[in-house]
Image (tube, rainbow, N blue to C red):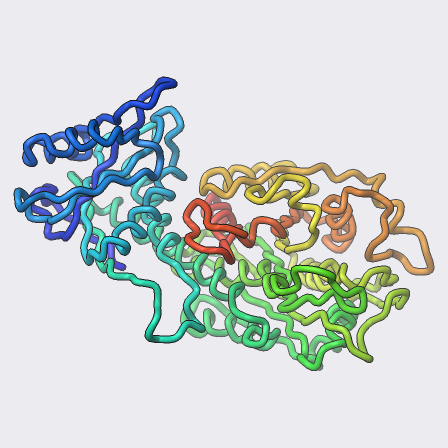
Length: 506
């Protein structure tokens, strides 16, 4: 799908269909929406002799967000179809509204089997959002909404996708608008890469495959470097936690170190750490349900890869390091056992109470390694606890950190891109249960029901005294039903866009 900026009016647009928007009216009773002048709707209605407004009235088209009305043009303009999309109440309008509308339009165009669609960009600010901001959000939504996981579909039955071109009519200087389109495509494509990695079945996405995906990004972009540690290197680094988690599998673990440096030397370095459990059976504490979803336990690692693909093109003004601890957590005669004691890279011993609390173990080694690189900030991303969904639900990512400024920046970044984030407190008292027993720490059994907070408490020490944030994406990396710009059940790419926005904020 290609986005093209033009100067042509909607009636002369070289497209199969043109789209216009309308806001819903205030009030309790359903009422017909009004066409807008600023996006060409009223002018188009005149050319069609009032057919659009008449149809809106007859069908009581209310203009709810995402609501669609399509009608023929009867040859009165070049396009054969007009698509009217509701934008909801103007007081509720946001950039995320535009992302959802972009996704809806792509899906509608494919359903109507059209190849080219045209619309007109309003030149004024809407709710303090400049045209380029709105265009970037719309582009992001369109690209996110156009994604389907089809890798293993038979070639003769792919989802119907006919849309090839989005033509956007705009006035004035098109340079910032072209930049907005490019950035929207880069960011959304990066999120879609992460979705593709997470959706891929575990037999095709082993720790070795995950490392290869990181290498592919580095191979494609010269400003990205990638170093992959195999078993021998992991042993040399004394990453005992990663080795312990992987010992029940025939698949060897991998540790990946990605790096990006800006053209000019930067005083700021951000370390991104991703949990990469490519399949999680729970180990000897085997999971009792929904194991088919455990291919998504490497979403944190996939996020790191997606972010690096984007920053290679967007070139932020800060140094970024990425660290991925990849392993399978399976059960076998060689698997780690409850009550075993392991030694982490940091030298701290951990008693294994629950083999299904393995994510924090591989992250412990990854965080300790990341600290050696002297970062300004550390952000780890992990599908860590089932408690995340009970804490804040399925559309909000809980985060915990030791630096208020860093936390606030990530909260702002998530809000800006439509990936809401919420801060949970780090309550030190909950850590007491981890400190009991024959080792320095236990990996589970803190005695508290606050599992998401407890997971972060385990990780905090391994971040040492660095400014650090933990993002528990267990409930937001995967959508159990189509929602927002996600057309199907599966990976969401969350929080790729949040991290990119955060990096670009420097």
